[in-house]
Image (cartoon, rainbow, N blue to C red; front, side, top):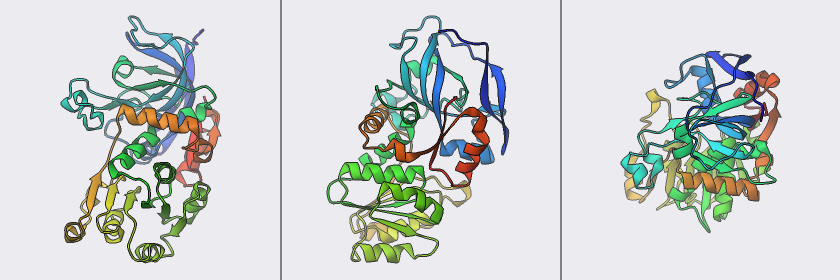
Length: 352
């Protein structure tokens, strides 16, 4: 495959300042590979970096870590299973092989996790260099035949959501409340259904997001800007509350209300991280104690979750066509980024 010397890339120069620039195509490192990007999703963490920067990112920087691409070249001494021309789904996380949690198979707890798009330049570009560490200790799988690139790119967010429902033991007969109707919240609705949940409710403070999320067919949409969420949930459940509550937003009020609403013996999954200065929101631990509740902290995922997410996208149990609302070329980066920042899109995917 002939590789050019220059490429277009989405470069973040400063907070809320970006452009599409012409830059050098990266060289594959020894043991790594160069991938021609077919599609790259715009993630919530990308949006946070655009809004306020990131401690692991030194600007200017190329963002993007939800990747589907075609192998364009292999670095010297490449020992991976992939070949030039092969189409791959590539996740960002690279695990530390020597961390004791990784050795135990609990990759999500590894202290030394690094990410494409943070420690290595990202993939909202025509090409991306995949480091050798990702080849040996990352998340890379063949993209299934028939799965569109824009859907094969967005495996990573579903991986964390699958991990959440694994930890929550979501299953037959459960009533699930998802607090937050962004793309992650929509994934929670789809995966709760796939796990066998009997009813799934979805709440948000933004009516516009609820309108977008309606295509995922939750049993109830709750507008938190106009309704008292605990009262509405109590009415929907006959006063017993949902058996599982997922806080899929960055509001410190969400875990407080989740503990108030969840059924006795229920599970609360703390999925959305909170601002550092609001991370101790005053959850009533007596309620947790006397109602026999489980509070489950959740971040990251393991390779098994990435594989399952890809399988669910390929089978349609994660409806990629409903999740991805905008598929845009690089010359429409402004439109895609601003649609996502303004909440007018669920998932934006760029096709360089």
